[in-house]
Image (tube, rainbow over all chains, first blue to last red; front, side):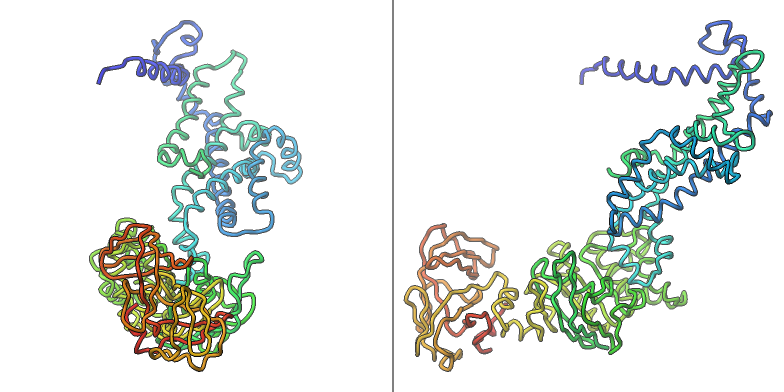
Amino acid sequence: MTKRPLPSLIMLAYLLFLLLPIYWLVIMSFKPNSEILGAFTLWPQDFTLGNYRTILTDPSWYMGFVNSFIYVAMNTVISLCVALPAAYAFSRYRFMGDNHLFFWLLTNRMAPPAVFALPFFQLYSSVNLFDTHIAVALAHCLFNVPLAVWILEGFMRGVPREIDETAFIDGYSFPRFFTRIFIPMIGPGIGVAAFFCFMFSWVELLLSRTLTSVDAKPITAIMTRTVSASGLDWGVLAAAGVLTIIPGAIVIYFVRGYIAKGFALGRV
Amino acid sequence: MTLRLHDVSKTVDGKPHIHPVNLELEKGTMNVLLGPTSAGKTSLMRLMAGLDTPDTGAILWEGRDVTGARVQTRDVAMVYQQFVNYPAMSVYDNIASPLKIQGKSRGEIDAKVREMAQLLKLTDLLDRRPAEISGGQQQRCAIARALAKDVGLVLMDEPLANLDYKLREELRVEIPRLFAASGAIFVYATTEPEEALLLGGNTATLWEGRVTQFGPSMQVYREPVDEITARVYSDPPMNFVTVRKDGAKVHFPGGQLARVDAGPADLADLADGEYRAGFRAHDIALGEGVAGDLTFAAKVNSTELTGSETFLHLDVQGDRWTALVRGPQVLAPGSDLHISLDPARIFYFDTNGKLARAPQREAAGAGV
């Protein structure tokens, strides 16, 4: 086979452009502010871990991560608990308007979150949920539940109905069948749905910032408020960015085999 | 133990799937539901199992009305055409699962699972997952799970249809053996008349959601009550011609005459008029036949060789007939030949399709 350098060159250039911003973010996080602003350097001349130290020791920084983790976890659990039975119903039963309802669920994803920021703010303030983790978790259910239902329904449709019936004939009650037999069969689907809930909740900024002030303030909101009297703290901001990428990267590793199916809403 | 279906019917989306059916299945019997695809075999089974609720009528189990009872509470097991096992469990756990639900002790479960595994030759595969064994073994596993439950009613919906030829032959021999060992009521759905005869027991023939006849398999085969039942219970399909009985003669197409007192099928007391004469493909012979046989001139449309037998698709006076003859016969399409038919092997149906006269046993007893 003759060696063709052009395709690999294109690939290389593509990867370079793709990774350049991330590379820049990473090296920035290891530089002091003076180097970031003072000189153009391709790698840290004056290597420092000070930016990370600031984040991991200052509660106003690391509580942002904690808050984000809390509401993201809550949201993922709530979304899955709601979506599992809903997806089962859509995949197994015919009922009046099921197709319309199923499509309507997806249209919830088409509205920008900004549309819902104002009503949510008003609603949660009036029921004293403002600035709580559950408020953000519930608000994110708006787009995560429909998504999880779509993904899970796709996976559930791949399970023959005869398995359900055989289990009932064997004597399984519905809850027992669902937990012992059905859930293990759609394990990958649950993993993918959980990943997408995690991801969308983790990156969402507008609703989480609107619905919180101090106690439940997410890391992404903190990152947008680092302008101080002495100007922008570039290094710390970069370090926070790096730390924000890591959880997503870890989670995606576990569902990497099924992620394409997830992006196709379980319909591959 | 008896299962009684009393006027049971089912309509889905305005289309009747099952017309009112009356059936009574006795303890320890093998019952075959025979019918073409979409005749209602699966629908009827689902009603028996309790997976669907009938629109009218009642289902009685040991005299008790179980029409609306939840499937979990019923004394049934079911084997599907698709190989249905729990993919996340080992073969052992699959067979054990209904026993665990029943709350049996660990020792009891282990003994039963090993017994079933022995019976269905799964002993070496107990640790495997269903995805790691062959199709035939998966179906054995499903059958083992159904039988392990020790129920009064075992439903098998074309359990061998998705298996290859060799495995089907193998399991077909085993099923009557398993049935005899269980003492349960077996209901076995199939599209193949041959399978119904091999399994013996009783046959219910189904056609478009109706049970056309129910009785001992051999009797249904030999004396189908009507033309439809005869069609359902013949593979290849039964050949039909319209004939006219006139006094002492029956006029066949092409000027052939059969004497009413020819052979054991005595037609002397049938009223004169039009009849439908039906005969199975294997009752047609090549050549002129012996004295008293009906002889027809036929044109070959096509032939199918299966090795030991040949299907001939023939054109006889504009009617399409199928003949099944022994040995490989090489006949070019379009060639002319003579075929013969023993008049004693003919079924006569009246113009309403009801059986008027069936061949008597001595004559009809030969093979499938």
